Length: 149
Image 1 (tube, helix red, strand yellow):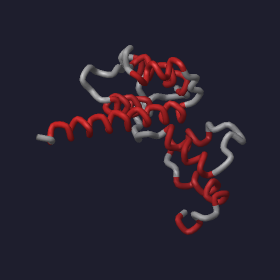
Image 2: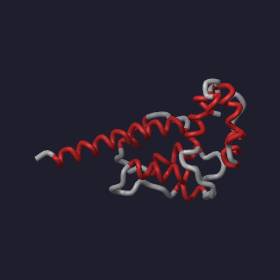
Image 3: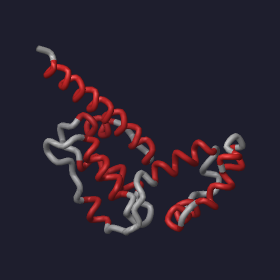
């Protein structure tokens, strides 16, 4: 595929030949004409396969996740997406609701998601990434404060 990386239309057609059974099942489930570019295809793929696991989990395991006190948004997010990718079927609608419910009620991201209409997993991941960056910046600032005499 690297040889043809400039030809995005060809990349879209060649991609399925490099997919395993789980990814191929996802690819086959895409609605006709729902992807308009190779960039959209790679974003959709990345959104769906945040991590790669093959053992299917019941929906109840996703519903039981919550952000533990004293843990970071990154830790919660990583655990959530790992489990999300182990779910069978289309769980996008569930993800949009259960991720928010798992956050503490006073968390800024939960408040933000309550006020905004998030319609797909890609949007949700974008919101989460923004808040993770803020959280990381805050942790770095705290670290600098400790170093200053």
